[in-house]
Image (cartoon, one colour):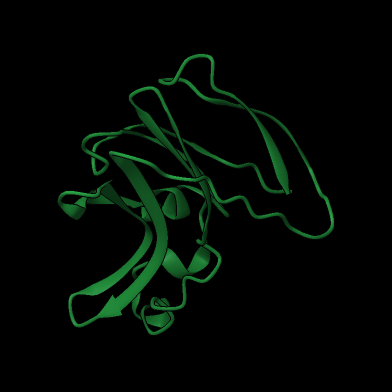
Amino acid sequence: PLHAIDLSNPYKPRELGQLEIPGFSTYLHPLDEGFLLAIPINIYNQAGYFTGALVFRVSTQSGFELLGGVDHSDLARAAECPQWYTDEKSRRYDEYRWWVQMRRSVFIEDFLYTFSSVGLSVNKLTSPSIQLTSLVFQTE
């Protein structure tokens, strides 16, 4: 769905509504000197599972520098996604968190807004692992 979000106060985002639309769109923004880049990613390895976005500083001089990651697992738990429960019965399904997919990210001033299938997270742009606030999308 297309979510209408009020971002006038980055510390208190509000979902104003949503609209189901068919199809999808993609947008690639051209980069020039000295930018940050957010890439949606799912990682599953010996250390565990990460679903979110990795954030990089990009420059022609130093290339890609990892600034950190934004993880939406807290939003999945808040949305009461059943496979995030930690009991023995659901533990075997724990790696299948496909509904928590990053959808979009946007940089506005000093803030990074990331949108996933379960919610919105607002993080500090220079330290993306620092979450300032979040919003869990309502499900019907």
